[in-house]
Amino acid sequence: MAQATARHILVSDEAKCLALKADIEGGADFGDVAKANSTCPSGAQGGDLGSFGPGMMVPEFDKVVFSAPVNTVQGPVKTQFGYHLLEVTSRTD
Image 1 (cartoon, rainbow, N blue to C red):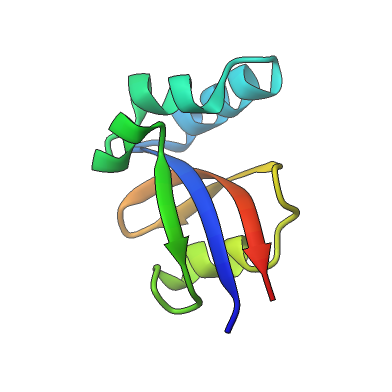
Image 2: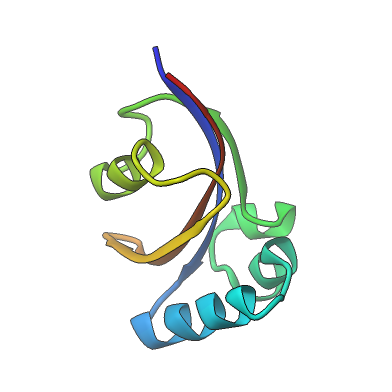
């Protein structure tokens, strides 16, 4: 079964999500941005979600994690929790 590792940043609105994505694309460290801004408890670990398989996360999240290029920031991705920036750090099929 496929497995992925990913990290994310969760914020409440799309505008903030887009601003943070621009910061990261401009050279800011994803982990530092997650620690400073993410409302998810994973933010304390730089947004690290560890390893997981398909179906373990909400569908919107899964769709991106199991299709997006590795090591590329994706988002905003809207879920019931808010807006996410996602970065797949590894994936096995």
